[in-house]
Image (cartoon, rainbow, N blue to C red; front, side, top):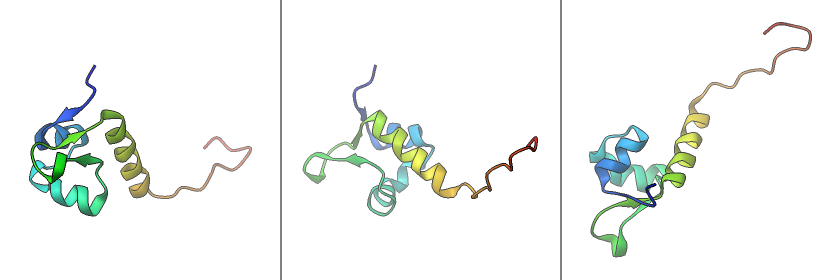
Length: 73
């Protein structure tokens, strides 16, 4: 069991993003990753990344009307 994911490549692989974009992902899109004192390797908790990717998914899915009662939708 991983407690912490270390490194931009591993973090971005986990969420399907380009590691070259990690600064943008963190500062502009709220990717929950950090560096100690603003330097060194990026780190992230798997459960935080899962929550972030679910939020991203939900924000980009089209809104669907709920099924109408009595239909086989």
